[in-house]
Structures are given as structure tokens and as C-alpha cells.
Image 1: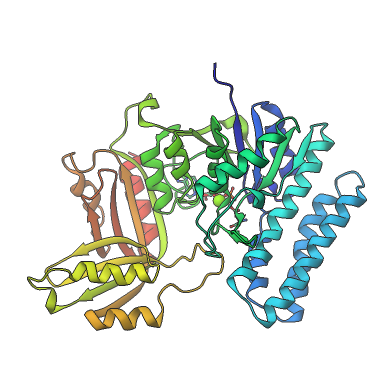
Image 2: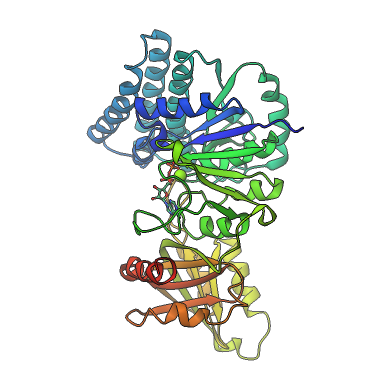
Length: 454
Ligand code: ADP
Ligand code: ASP
Ligand code: MG
């Protein structure tokens, strides 16, 4: 029989303070199949580090550093006196201070990644001690030894084969060293410089390591008891989904359900590893299991969930040359690709293309994607208009393109709103609407009521 091997990831709120870390440690201890633990930085720390990396004056720097120190000291001071650990945390904080000073003189994406990596370093060092305090054998591991990426600082791409080989070389030998505690979100490029996978990237780390180590399950512990029919912060009536297919959950993550980083399910789908999502504060409530459609025991519903992605920009590209011409689309997409722009929604007419671009800046350094150079190049082949302050609402489900009455059910309740663009038909799993940012939550609430609360 195959032995179970779980990799468990705990997000920022699950390691925010001493009581949260204890809850998370109890979850790890309660299941002897949990062999590797991936941690985020304590809640709030990454935001402070990102702000420091943007370059702040001395006063603001010391305020931010004091806040970081207080978050970590509050945990440290509840542990039995441990001069070695205190010394390590102090060294990391001193390092943050000197890198922040450097960033105030000249910042760079590489420096940003180096600086923000310190959050995960501290939370993982503290967590090891919490496990040890509970008499659990645990080993701290620097994930940068195995999580190899390219050098796109701020949103690096993992190198899957390298990660597999490095995991074999460095992690498998630690088999008898108790629970391995490591960092999410960070990695390293070929020359050893620290990189990051983009904000919220720890989920992705857990999936990448799970795949490389042949885990039988990836557990994502967060502050909600699973994946809901919508973000429960927006729709308190949202219901927990007990089991969901990879295809549906991937659509949700892609279209903004923050509970999973958009790339998390890619390794899980590729290697067919089930993913569990639950709350570290209430593990007894159970959670959501995401797996292959064949494993789903209940009927796949027509409507599964709603997701919202803010900060969308719509580009409308118009060219009379497009009339009866070939190659215009290819031209435009070539330019977009050369500028590393990934397009979400596309609609076309005879002489124009409308497309949306996500500007939420999931990369760590938050740099703008829409550069002057991009506009210059596009302007050579077409007229460009830009509309901002839009939001993408995704309706996720099954057989949406082969079920009668779907458009009426969706649009029938949206009389009071302007729907700027709609994508329907490319996927059987989603309908995407683009609306004004200010209308987005109202639209979500009405759709949720109609679809899920009747
Ligand atoms: P973590 O720090 O643990 O990674 P996140 O804040 O990144 O946690 O993700 C959890 C949050 O995701 C929840 O608090 C919830 O507000 C949000 N969320 C968005 N969409 C959904 C959804 N469909 N189901 C559950 N949570 C969702
Ligand atoms: N600490 C990182 C962030 O806040 C990564 C993560 O939590 O997943 O974005
Ligand atoms: Mg997250």
C-alpha cells in the first residue's frame, strides 16, 4: 500500500502570533503523515518589508522595523528563553535594517526579493522552536537550496526539473530528521540570488515541493474552512464547497479567489495530487478537497462559484487595416508577449480587439506592466484606448456552454449595471464579465443571491 506523505502549508494568519503558531503546530503534530511544513511570513510582515524595499526615509524605516520586530518578539518571548534563537532573529532584523537603508538609496527588484525573504526566514525559525517545545523533532531547512527559479525577480518562474533533482539531493536525505520546516514564497536563481514567486506564492511553493517529493496530499491551512462559493468577506452567505474538481478550482484561483495563489494547482493537476484547504483556527470544521473530476462523488453542479479580480485594465485596439486582412492579431499579441503582458479576456470585432490585462501587480516589486514603450509599439499598428477601474467577475461552473438558459439566468438580474465586456464560450467552465470596479461587489452579491441562495 502507498504510504501517505502530506506537505502542509500555513499562511500568514496561521503564523501571525504565538497562539496561531501553536494551533498550526498542533495540526502538524496531530497527523503523523505531515512530513514537510511550508510557512508564510507572519501576517503583516511581508507588507512592511515590501514598503521598506520601496525606499523610505530613516524615520519611517525605523517605525516599520520596530513593527516587524514587535510581531516576531511577541512570539519569541512566549517561548522558553533561547539566546541562540533570539540572536538569529536579531541578526535577521539587523540585516533588514541595512538592506532597507540600501533600498532607500537605490532600490531594485533583486534587492526587494532579498529583503522580503526575511519574513519567511523569521517565521520558519520560530515555528521550529514551537514544535521542539512540544517535544517534536523538527529541522529548519532553507528552501532556496531546492526551489530553483529563473531570474525574473518579483515573480520568478520555477524550474521544475531542477527542483525535483535538488529535492532528491537535499531533502530526501533529511528523512529521519523529524518534520522539515521550510519557507514558502522564496527561491533562488542559478547564481544563488534570492527570488520570489509573487505575492501569496507560498501556496505555490507547497505544491511545487509536494510534486517534487511525491507527496500524496498538499494541505493549505488558512483562515477560512475551505473554498466557498464566493469570498465570505464579500458574501457572508457563501457556502463551503466540500469537494471540487481541479478544473473548477483552477478557474477560481485564476480569476481571483485569493484562497489559492493562481499557480498553486498547476503542479497538483500535473501530478494528480489532491489539495486540501482548511482553517488552522478550526481544523475540526473540515474543509475542501480539490482533486480529479473522477474522484468527485457528488454531481458536478452547473454553477459552482463566483470570483472577483480587481484592478483590470481594458485595452481597445482599433485598426482599419484589420478589415479583411491577415496577421493583425498575431502582430498585436507578438508585441504584448515581447513586453511580458499576459492577456486575460479577449473579444474581437471586424476592426478592433478588446483585451484585459491584470494590473494587480502580483509581482513583489509592484512595477507597472503598461510601459511607454509598449504603447509606442502598439500605436504603430493601431489606435489604442485604455479604460481603467474595472473588475472581472467570473462565474464558474460546469457545462456552461451546453446548458440552456444560462445567459438569461446571469444577465437577467443585472439590469442595473453596465457590463462593459463579456466572454462566454471559450471554456465550458466560466463566463467572465467586466464591470466598473464600484459595481463589482453589488454584481457579485446579486448573482450569488440568484444562483446560490434560492
Ligand atoms: P493565507 O495568508 O492563509 O494564504 P489568504 O488571505 O491569502 O490566506 O487567503 C484566504 C482568504 O481568501 C480568505 O480569508 C478569504 O477572504 C479569501 N477568499 C477569496 N475567495 C475565497 C473563496 N472562494 N473561498 C474562501 N476564501 C476566499
Ligand atoms: N508572505 C508572502 C506574501 O504575503 C507569501 C505568502 O504569504 O504566500 O505575499
Ligand atoms: Mg494566500
